[in-house]
Image 1 (cartoon, rainbow, N blue to C red):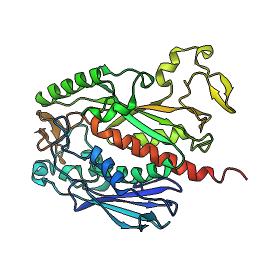
Image 2 (cartoon, helix red, strand yellow):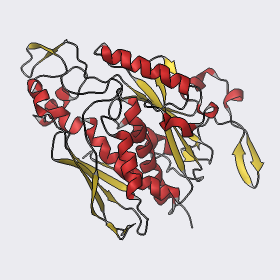
Image 3 (cartoon, rainbow, N blue to C red):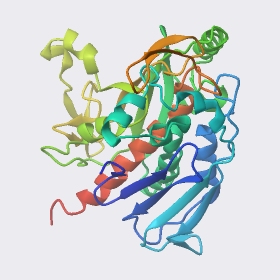
Image 4 (cartoon, rainbow, N blue to C red):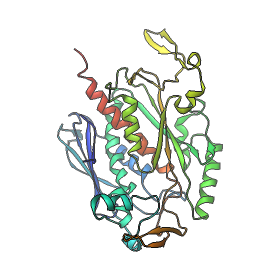
Length: 357
């Protein structure tokens, strides 16, 4: 089944958008890890709905409860269970969709696969599920902090508006604006664009760039569980994601080998590269340089305009969105990208401990 991720640091999420609660069980987190509950809540607050004028106005506090696995502020080595109760469901906003398939949603495919579906807010297919991932990712971040690993993501593009390369910006400024772009001028233009699209009852896509620093050399398990392959899988499992590229990505095909190769040199007893087109991964294994990648998000499928579709019986119908929805998902997806990256790295750190004597 597809509700779990990871080999040694393994998570299983549960719950639906309009159910009683959502949550996650983390199995394999080492004992003795100090748990900062304020930090976990702050990560959830970055993802929660209703945080600004350019996000959905659904009001959820996303306050989490610890059910097991933590005693006297530390992990016990047993499964860690966290739960977040849903507080602001409006299932009536979806009643008209009980037998109708929304364009570009998972309605048809879930119905075809399982024989029926929870139409309330998309049920399990809703991005509401990602709150559980963020909670688990926060614990993974706490684990990685002991190794000095830092993970920062930011909104790098909305529509045609693109921020400068991450090396040209101060990523600590990411949280200074509601769109989560560290370049203030670009951020203001992004906010204006999203607001215009919202007023037009439409949606718009964008991309998130994630930068991981101080990764230990050696993470990744060739040949099938290469580091970049697992990062790609993790990112593509996030709702609305349509693309993933790391390092030079698709732009790298424009370069010749002599331009693209990252030459090695030695400094302070460490092997480094003069450039980083590889994106911190070579042969599927981390090389100690910055790991950076882009994640592309499609425009949110729910729009407040009339569209043509069909019902379960194949009859043509007209549908339009109701309720509260994001005009652009990327501002709230930043902590989700970070969380999934943290879960990938935490798992590989534990797996790497068995690589050699």
